[in-house]
Length: 348
Image (cartoon, rainbow, N blue to C red):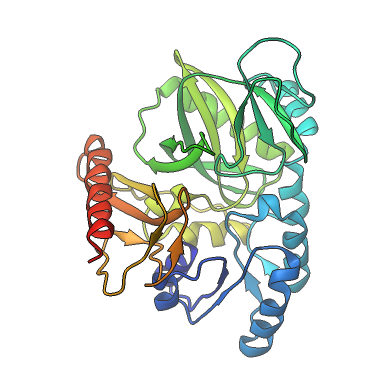
């Protein structure tokens, strides 16, 4: 996604990621595949790319939520166009974050830092997580290790608001509805998102006020998103994604330019409309080896190379749909998902 955005903005991007998919390799000037985003796995690649290309600037995406020290390391090597490590880290200090939400009178599901002792419906969440990974229902009997917090389960529809921040100011770009998928291991995995979400004018104003209050406390820069749930027209904040989110790719070819301008301390005007569009991750319902000679449809992104083995429950690729009617976007994504399943089943 970031590579495509950079190309659309007129750059020759260099990509470092854990997949190095076909479309990334086609788009980027250079691509390095790494085993993980841990410092031990990226530092050699970073050294080589700086020597080879003289790279000075960096834009980062998802994955650093679980590798905070890597973001700190990258900030020592590049000029980061996005939120600084220390600010990014603050959102993962859950005790402080929830305390600030309470001070700002921002509604959110009850959250605690030790296992609850009542019989309510609770979720257990990693302190440093993203995309719903490793979120599970808490039954009071699980053994767990690592840093977690507990949040009371809140029914409702899940949404996000895409924004661009600069100099304690926020500009809202649009509202999105998102959905998850479940498998035997993960129940709340992020699966897809579409723009043009139906959010009441009252809640749009409320969310704008929440964002303005938050940016004054957390001086964010560039694109980001706020995830929230609506139940019975009541909003509940879930989290802030203080980096370019998946929804950004649904907002046209100029969206990265908004991010760059904001990072240069100029809050840009948002004066163009986005067409109804959606994005969905295709997870493997069984282990699959990508067949040779497979011709991917043009609306498939994150395309794996032939011969790559993908285990059950892991992402295969992603699909993007756009329609004139916002209500038709999900139907188109469902049709496209069936086409991908047929292609893989036939091995064509």
